[in-house]
Length: 100
Image (cartoon, rainbow, N blue to C red; front, side, top):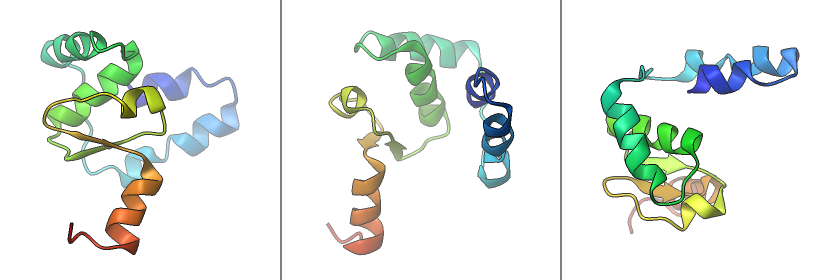
């Protein structure tokens, strides 16, 4: 999904900068039929297709958190993953600590 979205960016310099994601990623999830099915299930919560695939990949990777600034996504409940704004995540884990 990341590769697809990056390739759709009309600015080549941004494409190059965004391609660095692979160097910091600990896992790369290839799309499978199961992920696409899970993505369609997530879309039923009024989440756009690309976002639903991102979330489905995060679930496949067994991520505990999905960081987004999209308020529409943040208002949803997706079982087995916490939807969190990046600033709130930083505040909770790096400023306040994880003792809550």
